[in-house]
Amino acid sequence: MMYCHKCGAQSAPGQRFCPQCGTKLILSGEPAQSQTSPETKTPSVVVSAPSAESSYSSNPPTQSNSNWQIQAAQSVSRPAPTKSGTSTTVVVTVAVIVAAIIVYIGVGLWTTRYRSFQSAINACETQFDSDDWDSNVGGEYNMFNIGDNGRTLTITANSYNYAIAQCVYDELNMPNSIQTKIDHTRPIDGTQTDKWNGITATWTYSDDELTVILEH
Image (cartoon, rainbow, N blue to C red):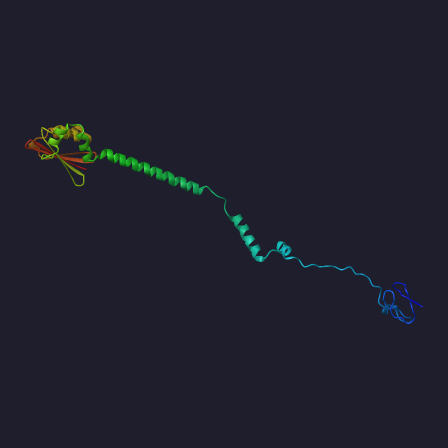
């Protein structure tokens, strides 16, 4: 009788395989090392391929690495915000305000110093009786003549309308010294001239009429 060397089951003579477990039996005269050793279970080692997600997270693509490095370099090299832009804006704003103030003052001074001849005449018109004004300034006797685009005023004055002429002098801020010269001019004195505040006055006296030419 033979016995299975693996499970110990009894087998009939001449059988080559165990009727119980199917293991090849060791016959007499056969070396034991030629027979199959008892089956053993070798622990299997499962090597799983790394997933795409884990591979990406542990070793991101070269292009992503490059982009990340560029962004990191930019964040490091980018200078912190400064106040230069704000300072420039403040300087420009102040300069504009100062320029506007200068222009405003300049226009005001020019208006005060170089008052238009027409505005002086209009101011005097409200100070005299309308009939008296019309008879001396308007109509056939034109006391005032404005020319050269408002830069020249010719005044023809006599004993009847001299008060109106003096009113215009005052509105134009003519100094009293010049007015005195005009009042005392004689025919033999010829043409006289003087100036103030950018206005040049030229006058003559003849035939009981005083002709005064004012020029800006």
